[in-house]
Amino acid sequence: MNWLKRLLNRNKRRIPDALWQTCLARLPFVQQLPASDLGRLKSLSETMLATKPVTGAGNLELTDEIAVLIAAQACLLVLNLTLDLYDDMVGIIVYPSAFIVPISEIDEAGVVHEWREPLSGEAVHAGGAVVLSWEDVENAQAFGVGHNVVIHEFAHKIDMARGSANGFPPFLRDYHQDIGARRWQRAFSAAYADFSRRVETLDRQLSGNFDFANPADAQRYDALFATLPMDAYAAKHPAEFFAVASEVFFLQPQPLASDYPEVYTLLAHYYRQDPLMRS
Ligand SMILES: [Zn+2]
Image (tube, rainbow, N blue to C red):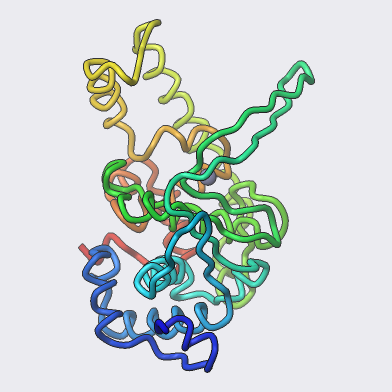
């Protein structure tokens, strides 16, 4: 029986040190936290794993390492806040690789479009689970520096803690007195509008028959979009802007802080962490 099962069955809460160190070695952006923060992160991860079931799906053999790696990253977001922000999450479901979900969207003409799409992660509406593809959790770097599906989905979960995701996470009385709602709204709206304009401008520079499968086209895309401080996907919706900005905030904060300093400052106030000071 593995450690996670023992933990859930016998309520043994401690993550073995060797396992914790193995996981930290795979998470350099976590490993650079001061020792006192790491101790608190471990304890938060233990509480999360004891209270939120992690379930393997699609024949994934769930290991202790998978569970701890996910919990440590999920808890990094709330390291200086509270696990209460994940209260409405029923648990975490992990698939071996991208999972297919039916998507439906209504366009401006009121026509419903439905299709099936492979996803690397999904924070299922308020009250739902967080679903992750292990392959994408494990190979986050394959998508470029600054990508992290766990941070992304748990940022959505925080955003959803009081209703639907809109890029406006709940301000908690104990932690966020110093952030004005209007200041947040103004800074994020302006940054989102500017970022969306930049993405549109870059899109226009791609040829009409652009094809990701063509290596020359893919290379041109990478060169053009590398000028952005975060993935262009952030332009999809204000909720995605918050989630993608949270990814780079924790993993590669410098370009975000340079291009959108007010967004960086507000995220530092919100998460009560300053990743720029760690590197
Ligand atoms: Zn998203």
